[in-house]
Image 1: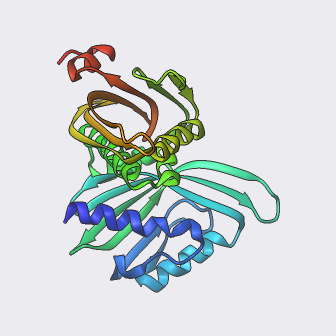
Image 2: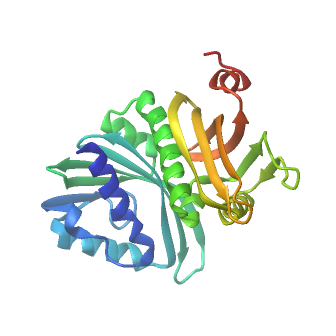
Length: 268
């Protein structure tokens, strides 16, 4: 149930920035929501899916633009925390604002029975009783999600996992490709280029090693040249470094996981 809870919560937030009402089927009929962040909402509790919908409408009202980007979901079972970045532009003043944001959820039988907002993600995590180890495990989940998005060709969603200052290094780069790239858009363009040049292009991670803030992946990359029919099937170790729930550095092409661990100052 815990994996389903995470997936359902992720789907709940995917509709937010479309300005459509989220799928209220995730909410228990007796759900309560505590808003503790907007000045005129502090201390107010909304009850039932209709109350939550009213709270969402009040969120949109003062802003010309508002996006709440989901960075990661932490926890398992019936207690989860979602961590976001909120960006707004005031309707009347044009003032722009950006801040971290978090929600703590309690679930019952796969439904949200209570959730609460926090400006400080750390406070939400402490309220949920989550440990640093669970935070580190979320790094693995982010890399695992990135793997799935690459294999599905969901490039915009994959782009959201990258830090704006991300650095990409391919130790086995082709002669016509830079070894180092910087910026999420440059990396996205490279990956799209790879997928267009190869049929059945993708990767399979055989093992994830959690070495916070790094995730080391024993990876098989595969594909068939679209024009040449040449096949690749390469086993290597790749290193992902995360900061604040985003991929800040990606290094592909170590020969072994032991080599990758040594490269980041760790020993197997």
